[in-house]
Length: 135
Figure 1: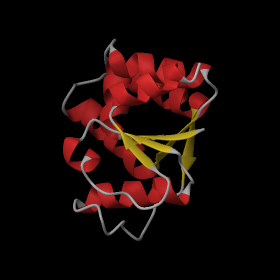
Figure 2: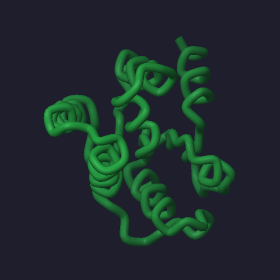
Figure 3: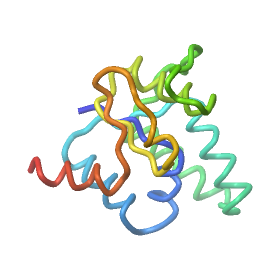
Figure 4: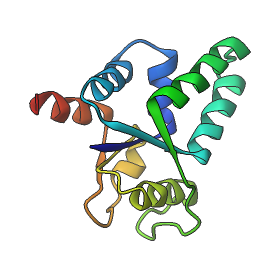
C-alpha cells in the first residue's frame, strides 16, 4: 500500500506523541510505502523552524527519518481540478501520479474535496482505523 502523507500529519507525527505518530508507526509496521514530494518536505522544514522553532538537530533527524522511511516522489506541475486550493491541488496530483492508495491529511477542506481515481482522502483517525481493521 502506498500512502501519501500531508505536511500537517508529518508535523504532528514527528513533533508530538499522539494519533499521527501512532499512525506512522502502524503504517511502517504494516509495510506501507510512505510518500511525500518536495513541496511537502520543504513545507515541513519551513513550518517546523518558523512556527514550532524546531532546532537544527531535530530537523536533521527528521530529514534522516524521511530518507529511511519515506519515498520522495516527483512534484506535480498540473493541479487536480477538483481541489480548489492550488497548493493542495499540486500535492494531490503528486500523490495520484505516484499511484498512492491513500492521501492522509488533517486539512478538512482538502478532505471534503472530490478526488479523481482510486485515491482515498483520509483523516488520520480514519486511516488508522482502516489500517488496524485489516490486521
